[in-house]
Amino acid sequence: MQTINEVQNEIIENFSLFEEDMESRLFYLMDLGKKLPAMDDSHKTEDYIVKGCQSKVWLFPMFEKGKIYFEADSNTEITKGLVYLLVNLWNDRTADEILTTDLFFIDKIGMSKMIGSQRSNGFASMIKQMKMYAVVFKEKSI
Amino acid sequence: MVNSKLDIESIRKLFPVLHQHVNGKPLIYFDNAATTQKPLSVIQAINNFYEKDNSNIHRGIHTLAERATLAFEATRKTVQQFINSNESEEIIFTKGTTDGINLVAQTFGKANLKAGDEVIISSMEHHSNIVPWQMICEEKGAILKVIPINDAGELLIDGFEKLLSAKTKIVSVVYVSNALGTINPINDIILKAHAVGAKVLIDAAQAVSHLDIDVQQLNCDFLVFSAHKLYGPTGVGILYGKRELLDAMPPYQGGGEMIKEVTFESTTYNDIPYKFEAGTPNIADVVAFKYAIDFVNEIGKTEIRHYENELLKYCVEGFNSIDKSSNHQIIKLYGTAKEKVSVQSFTINGMHHFDAGMMLDAKGIAVRTGHHCTQPLMKYFGIEGTIRASFAVYNTKNEIDVFIEAIDKLVNSKLR
Image (tube, rainbow over all chains, first blue to last red):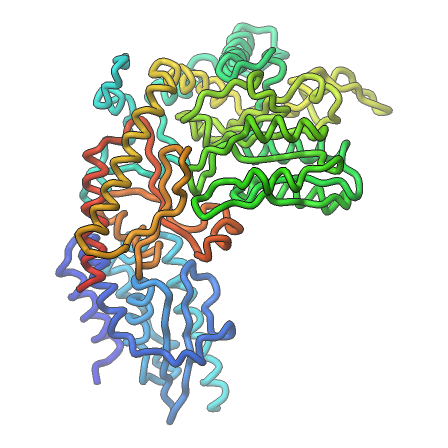
């Protein structure tokens, strides 16, 4: 299994292929979104909606043998791609791994320019929510 | 400056902002219903004011104060002529349409509404023509009634008639829907409202850049709009009101300018329009607004509307061609009224409007996506929001070609 930083470097490399072509970058994000495993509809409840996103984003955390897993979905495809980036990075990791991650890929791929300030805020909310789940699981497991 | 036969290329040259690349593509600005771009004359007027004439208005006796006052009042006169009000004192400067509606609700509404009275708005109002009335109705125990619409996005006039009664005190309706582009039959609405003794406010925010407005012919009691949707600066709005109503209304805000005499015991208020213009106004932008109206007058609204309607028709034909080439309905139009301006809301089958908006932005195309501050209207159509393209006089058929091609590509990406 790749380390979190190896996954981040891979994301950076993949996005660098598109250079400044914004359209291709967004199409790529939409394609990534399609890789997100289907989410159990019964988990798409108000409790698991990420607050602060313009689009609807659901994030359902699971904890198994000291590792965290996420089910996620969104009603917009670009956002689904954004969720995929995080889920792919942090699935099957420990709470500590998540909480100590330096998310350097975000700036490196020019995220804020790509998705704009409103969606960047939503993206930050997703990160915050995932880290919050990590904190909760960490405390539970102590 | 501008040729009479609408030389669009010459008109475009007057708008510096249009000449730039966004995401590596030439900017195509189709978000004119949100705000229009500003001609150079408006931009220069703001600069000139601060470079040469900046001063506070009305009370100074020095030369700069005199110049600033004259320029400020020249705009009032220009607006008066532009909407043909009886006198320039009936033109109140506000911050914008929203401010104007709040002013009327909090002064005329406060003074004239009592428990059980009714205020009528329509199903296609912008939130700014819903919330101020909800607030004053709640305060006064009055009731808010809503004119229904049909699926084409047209008001049901028989439904309106059923709502009218002796209890109706205020009817506040939008002239042109910002989300749908529908032109409402406000002549008829005003006549019918007056027949039961109600006063009528017309929200002309979206109408003012497309339609000729003559407040005396309309015989509306109040009319509001914003400068920024009429090629003018943001932060300036107009409230027109009939003199007898404005005279009788209590002031909105207290402060400087709106007084005649102040003692610690009591204050006598100034005459209109100053009674409603407390504090130092947005002088530079008001001064510059005159140049926006001059720009529109020079081309002529009839010419503008004729050209914009051509663009709208061309765009709808483009949408139809996408549907035709894919053999089923992919583009769903919202707002198909017989009488409308160059605003088209639509959704793309199977694609969220936010995704579409971002993909179009990647192509340098600016459209609006979302509920357009008309959530009750979106609820009526059973949707969260739409993509909205809205055209102004500087847009071109070539731009629409690029836009339609981009949508076509999006649609095809969905069919992959």
